[in-house]
Every structure is written in C-alpha cells, then in structure tokens.
Length: 140
Length: 284
Image (cartoon, rainbow over all chains, first blue to last red; front, side):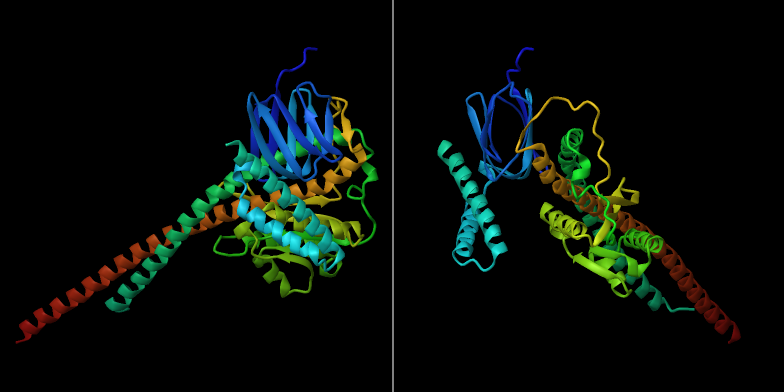
C-alpha cells in the first residue's frame, strides 16, 4: 500500500468545524505528551490535554490552543474533537492575560481543594493561550 | 352602538399592538437564522463523536462502565427544556403537557425528580409538588457548551450516585420553521451503542481503550444535551416567529373589520342627520 502524502485534518469543537484542510504535518498535545503526526501514521486514538497544536501546509505553519477532547488518527486523516480550540490570531491576548492573573491570585490563596484544581487548569489554559498568541505575532 | 370615537381608539390600539407583533416577528426571524446556523455547526462534532464511540464500543466491554449500566436504585429523572419567555404559541405548553404525561406514566409526582432548563417549565412545576433537582434559567441568551456541560454533569452525578435510575430529556426538536416536534430522549444509561461490525483499523490507544472510553462517555452525554439545547433554542424562535406572524395577520383582519364597522356607524350617523334635517324642513 502506497503511503498517503498528505493528511486531511479536521478540527471540530462542539460549536463548529474550525479547520478542514490538507496538511503535511502536525503536532498534538496528547495525554502522555506531544505527538507528531506525518502522513501514513498508524491508526491511533488518544485523549488531548491542554496544550498547543500546530499544523504545517507547505511552508505555512498554523498554531492553535486546544483544551480537552480527543483525536482520531488514521494514515490519511486526522480528526480532532476538542472541547475548546482557538486559532492563534483569534486569541484575545488581554483577556488571556487577565485570566492568567486571576488564576495566579487564586493559586496564591487556595480556599478549597476543588478551587485549587480548577484554578490550576485555568492557569494552564491561559498560559497556553498566551504562548500560542505570541507565536502568531512573532511570525507575522 | 359604540361611538365613532371609541372605535377610532380601538383601531389605534390594535394598530400599535400589530406594530409590536410585527417587530417581534422580525427579531425572531433574525435570531432563528443564527440559531439554525448553530444547530448545523454543531452537527459535525456530534457525528464524529458517534463514529469514534461506535468504533470503540466494538472493542471494550460496554457493560464495564457505570454510565451504561441500568441501576436498580433511585428514581427516574426528567430534564424539562422550555424557553425563558412566552409569546411563542404552544411551544412551552407542549413540553409541559408531555412532562405531565411522563410523570403520570412513571410513579407519579412523588416517584420522580425533575430538572429544569428555562423559566417557563420551572414556574409551572413550582406550584406543584415535585422535586426540582436543578434549574438553569436564562441560559438561552448566551447559550454555550459550558451550560450543557453543567446540566449533563449534574445528571451524571445523580445517576452515578444511584439517586437517578434513568435520565431522560424532553425538548422541542427543530424540524422546520413551521413545525416543532416534542421528543423525549434517553440520556442515561446510554442507549446500547452499535459496534459497527467491522472496527476499521487496528488502533493504538493512548492511554488505554478503557481510559479513553471512560473519558469519552461523559462528553458524549454533554454533546447530546448541547444538541437538545440548540434544537430547543432554534425551535423557540421558529415557534415565536410563527406565532407573531399569525398575531400580525389577525390584527390586520381585526383592523379591517373594525374599520368597516366604523364606516357603517359613521354612515348611519350621517344618514340619521340628513333624515333629521329633511324631516325638520318638511315639518316647518
């Protein structure tokens, strides 16, 4: 069987289909660490954690922040079902910054056990979003 | 016979009502468009999820998960999805009627528990003696997936804790602009998944299939609740648009018949005056 040369990438969130493109390469934040996917990858089903996802089409690289969900990888097709996914250029940096500060404050004075866990996740999300947003800006 | 002045005043009142219904119809129409787009936009996620889940069901023991087992404790829970506002025809009444029937079929009001989404449903049942497990009021203005997650998780908690033997959701399904259909859907235990025979490729799992399955099932329930909310939201605007359209047409009819009547009254008055003048002249 000839290996496929490209991957049909689809990123969907509960709200909409965000990305539907042919790509050459991508990287995902899997539950056990970042995964790189090239055409012809072994079928794989993995959960996603909060992290950065990027994909490359020719010379162009796109960055997204994703949080939660899972991914289905087939040799010629990748479907990402993410709870939250945002393109780098869509991220509101001011809001992410505010969220980070809020989370930081909460982490500094943890009131309850549950609060702490939630704040930690919020912190991670905002950090990832900030990181992804910076990438979009440095590239332009 | 009412006076000309009264009739004029009534016509003016109906006209201003008509302006309001017309405006409401227009607003509902534009919101309907957006709500409809959201229903369509949410479809790919639900479909992909179903596919992945079916593929998984073929290779894990489906009875292993608590969300798939039928417990023998607790009472049935119904999530009643109505709107927050009225002026939408029989939209809310239909849901409430179906819910009352459902309660009747189950063990009566004491044997079930209810969860409310939307103000209208809660208000009706607050006057009756039913246990309300949770209520979500005013979420439709800024409907997001997070709301569905809250509702689904509340239901899952009840179910897993053994307080709910089964969870169903009743809502208006958006069929078309002209018709909404009431559906009662089973959320928990999750209806038997179709292991689609040929489980395609041999997957690698990261982490293991059981972990993924465990992670996926609650998300599946959340996606279903989300779909129900979106459908109900679109159906609400469709119902409101239809209702307001009918109201506008009715007030046009009313204005027409009132105008006709007013003209008759006016003519009768003129005729009477002429007769009076003529007979007065003849008398002298």
